[in-house]
Length: 386
Length: 135
Image (cartoon, rainbow over all chains, first blue to last red):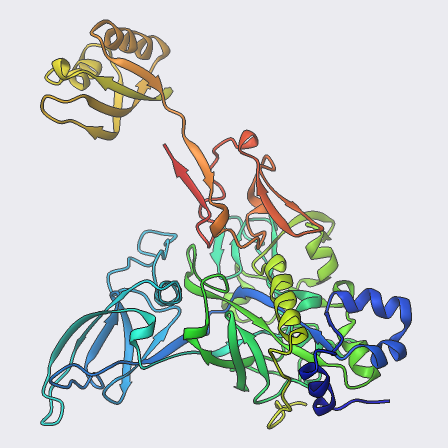
């Protein structure tokens, strides 16, 4: 027996859809078996909240009088440089951009207290930001200088656009050297002092649809507290990654490019963060609903942390030097227990991804579906590897 | 060496007393001024670190008491700003006393101030800046 997305949407509209989170379905399937659950459950919600560095926003700014062309000039939002190569009034702000005078790692390890991601968080918190810009002046855009204070609603358009988000699995970072290192996987203590992971594991969107059967281009998602869409495969999307017998990748595999209206989002779900020694970045909330079309989708969404494996990578030498070497593998149940036994050593673990907030995302999306506020979408085109 | 931090409060009448000079020259204390509020005809406040032998610091403090300066030992505190915490658990492996702990069922982080030894290991680890050191 199989269902279609159209059928499930009819149930959602009537407030009759049966929706559970990717955690709840695990116990349900153990109790009732996949066949029964496929008949009973319509949608499984997934969620994640984590730093996702390949993120940013583009804006369209209202013209001053006389008009000004920023393209080819220079512009800053709160002293963070924005990219101005898109016409007169479209500017692009990257999460990892920083003010020109940020010392970076000149005083090591740098603190990176303010960057594009922090500007984004301030905007979705309703705070004003200052736009300063210079242009070279044309007959049609004679103005050469501009400084103005704007809040999110003052922009004509404000769009969150993230080229690489929602990583399907990721490395576990460890440090085998003799000195502490500061990486995007966090602070890693020497001699395998700690092991850090970055995934929601069994709640993670792409880990619940490992073969991209239901998530594709155009999939409607929960993004930063508002509605967003998968708009393209993310950069470095690698469907050919190694997979286990359960078809779940055992290393970083698929990724998603996501887009959404920044004006719908909030600081509860989008946070500017400062990763010591690495840089500023944006923590993003993503939740994707997975239609339970058939028994196979039940099996996929019932994946458990203990069956999701990740490669342990040394970030002191192997990662920066691109050797590709893996020291071993561990599963997410071990990682989330707080301690792994690796190479005969007891190693405490730290998460870079918040499981608590991943649960909040999955629960919120579940509420939206139960209220009939959110409809599923058919992918317009599949992700590569689907 | 014996390093101790103090908050010194002195009345307007003592604003002109060269206490830092005297502490160094007469009592052999190395001093580090952490914060100073000096206003004419108003109460002065100095957050100062005294570094020296036990006798030097003790006699230096005696001198301050004798001339009428109020002395309070400074407590530094680590503050956990709950609203900023994302409960990612990145801090957990770094805290030596389990002052930062996590409920593994809820995956919720908590801070137990009474266990904190102000080692400051958590400060660079928290990307959300939920840990702050305050005087």
